[in-house]
Image (tube, rainbow, N blue to C red):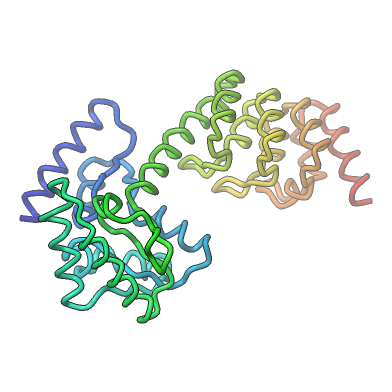
Amino acid sequence: MWEEAGFLLDDAATKLKLAGAEAVVLCTNTMHFVSQGIETASQLPLIHIVDPTAERILKAGYKSVGLLGTRFTMEKDFYKCRLSEKFGLRVIVPDEEGRAIVHNVIYTELCNGIIRETSRQSYYKIIADLAKAGAQCIVLGCTEIGLLLDGAGSELPLFDTAQIHAIAAADWAMGNSRLWAAQSGKETVVQLLLDREARIETVGNDGKTALVWAAQNGRKTVVQLLLDKGANIEATDNYGKTALVWAAHNEHEPMVQLLLDKGANIGALQGSVWHNFQLYALVHAYDFHLARIVLIAFLFRYG
């Protein structure tokens, strides 16, 4: 069963890539059992449903979770191990009787659009038992469970994977749009994305944030917009280079001046691949006015 389902999803993801898809979102918890195969077959990044959920749980300060889902999700290792091994969370599942109740309600009721108060109360009792076993919060590890539970009667906070996963997918898409806009200097597009609260610290495959991209390409207006929104001026890419390092390397004098005026750490240049900042400024900066700007700032800050 799993192998056949995996082949179908592998084929679908591969066709989506041919149609222009840049990532895969698998909108089901249980079928993440075959997520690795989908990612391998399609050669696309897969936004795993566990990851943003676990990140939100950790951000809330919880270390142990109760897991509700289909029997496969609660009993097989693919889901529990990702929570525990990748994120260090302790995972607690209901006992055999509780797992049977949770699983049966999903397939015989929720998947058929049936919502019963008796089932809701049964779930809340199972959650209470998980709390006694040490769970600090509950992962709704099936996209249908959110139809039944709203958290009002729960002893523990609920983390709805369907909602969290959808937000993560939107953030990924908005982040990629923002990175492209910053790189290409589309100020109006950047402003629109910022107004819609696109995450400004999203990074591309090379580790560059929008600020680093914009500084590298001399997009001063975009850099100003991002800094005004609180972008991290010291963010580094996969090579340890900051916006200031890239601006200096590409001889974007107004950009260097702006970043220095905004408090960029000039010591980042000293720690970059050019190692000795003074030597870099004097030898590699073909624009000696730029070298003078940066050296004066260095001497002013470090004597």
